[in-house]
Image (spheres, rainbow, N blue to C red):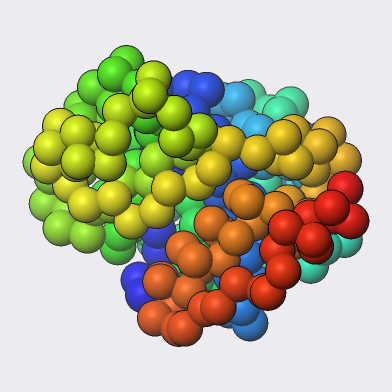
Length: 247
């Protein structure tokens, strides 16, 4: 598995930040520690989603050369490790061109949560990564925007590009796997179920794998983590009964 994975999307609202947090937590549960880097320096959300809106050191401090990346890592109560971006800093002079340079100082698996869209900052984030995960929803507008960001990644010479279909209900109103892969011309690496427990865990500022380990989304994240780590995964038995008590 690549050391630096960027998590991008062509549009906002597809669940990219929630996906990054929960994938990192699931990888931790598999014994592979990783660091989430909130590279949305204008509208950071990782810290907010995890209940840490204010930090003394941030990615901006790292990019400005004021501190080493190792010293900017915040450890969440769930042992999730984060390099957050500050919500209260002047970002006019922040340049993401150095992102790869600073992240290479960390001998860790890194997930970069990018801002939505396809501006220059997203290009710098993609350039800094070894692999690109494009998060989309099973609807035309989201997939069309995913197609655009995939093209940007390919134009930047990235070969390891994968699609994650998030918030899947598996009903007749959604695009199918075949339709999405045909539109994106890129393999789907995972489908994450729409799950009410995602909202509950976000409200409580913890990953779903910690709050509801037997939920549909948690099982989906486990399958994805095992695939990335090339490990076998067997879901727990009697999931239906376990979910009755997994509230």
